[in-house]
Amino acid sequence: MDPVVVPIDGVLDLHTFAPGELDGLMQDYIDACLESNIYDLRIIHGKGSGVMRSRVHAWLKKDSRVHGFEAASVDAGGWGATLVTLKRT
Image (tube, rainbow, N blue to C red; front, side):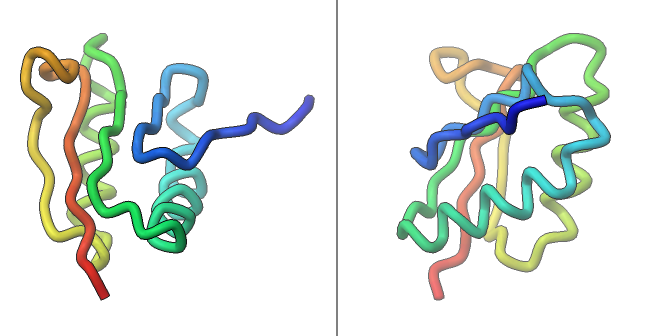
């Protein structure tokens, strides 16, 4: 399988990824955003049953680089997306 190319623009759409890929993907994406001086992210996890959202939130709570996160506004995806602010170092 060919690797998926994810643009580093502050928006991470998880629809094409399995929950088991989340840890490495989130780690790598946040690393890349910090290297590009991107501190405000929108993670699109979808609405569905809420499993991916729960996993994303649990992961974000553990990452010391995350300043905070909240559900996106309706125009930014509502409860199908999470807005994340990274700490500036």
